[in-house]
Image 1: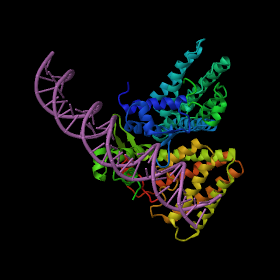
Image 2 (image 1 turned 135 degrees about the vertical axis):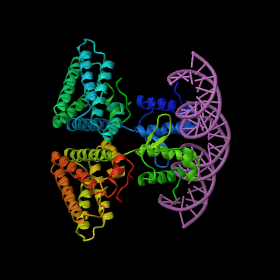
Image 3 (image 1 turned 180 degrees about the vertical axis):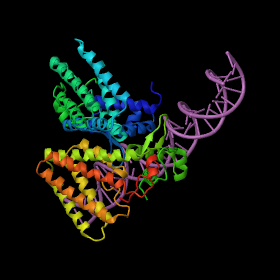
Image 4 (image 1 turned 30 degrees about the vertical axis):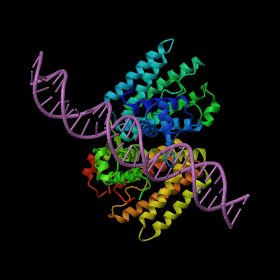
Length: 238
Length: 238
DNA sequence: TATCGCACAATTGTATACATTTGGTCAATC
DNA sequence: GATTGACCAAATGTATACAATTGTGCGATA
């Protein structure tokens, strides 16, 4: 169980939004939610407010909330934005220099990914774990609190996370090749940072993020649903 | 008077944070604020939550809020981030093409700024108004909802707004020259967008934002206060 | 037909009492 | 001396009654 009722409501509602149970554009009413979750309006209000802070809900003029709507364009735009921000993070790290431990942590993640990919049956949850660690370390290596904050915001959207859109099960061979290429990019980025090649670090990182665009095409989910913004936000296990 | 008490509390608290009455790092207690504003804890809570959403407060582990702290590094980092985002907006507008009305609105702002600058006594509030309109139009011309949203967030911090750090009263001549240059950059950006020169649009826009860095040096406010994060956030009239 | 305005229901806003959690102090204990 | 645990005060969490607002539909009226 969650510690507080607010936390509980937060988790339940977030899950319902991510899974698509609560579709984009739908308005949420305090009383209805309170009855459904068998708690009072107060923790519901708190949870809704936090969800708005996360970017999952929009506030309505005159009070109230609606589930934020993402169409296909929003998804690709957000991924592109992540690329710009991560590219900037890599550039900052290269220009300003960064903490040695952070860089070493990133290298360690790259090596772990190598191991994961050398297996015949790729453990995707493991890959996802180390991939996330790599990206988190690189983000922090930027040394810019402002940038780190915004990057955390943007990647909190499940489809904009570095490990989103990983696999739909088909085209395994091609998909595996994509992961190998991605880890080569990881290497190139770290090398560029160490060599203080800021331009290279930024451009490779941006290209790296762009791979997520291609992965959108692998989606087995109904593209029509994505177009109109009624698709679940967390399409892949991540 | 404000319509609701929440709104009232929001305005009062925001003002106190911006003006430096509530210093960065200070914790805010619901009961104390409720007594001070002579209202109940409920609207206080709502206001605090919205201020956290705006990025003016941080949530504390275990509940409660503290005023967010900005040191000099944070200020310059945020301005740099704005440059990256605005540069991206200009690039998108150039690459994808943008609404003709938005572009025309931006051109109109440029012309209005010309008029303002031709006067011997520059009306700074007028300049600020048209400068903001220019930047707003360009931001919207990006056509990316994700980017627009983040840009709104970042520029909601008073020191990161396009019209921040405008004038401290000294060095008038040099300052005026800076504004003229800035408007020339405005022109160059719009020309680049019309000619679909995305690279040029991005780089000029980024350079344009960088001017705000230089303006930081003109500040009459105690730099020591900025370093330690105890300076008021709204240093200039804007 | 268009428009104004009233009434009503639905929804959020507010106050307040009470519950729970947290953090710290102090004393007992090992 | 360090650690544990009980206690207390202070702060946030929660429920609930009531107030205020918003939006909508319907009817009166020009």
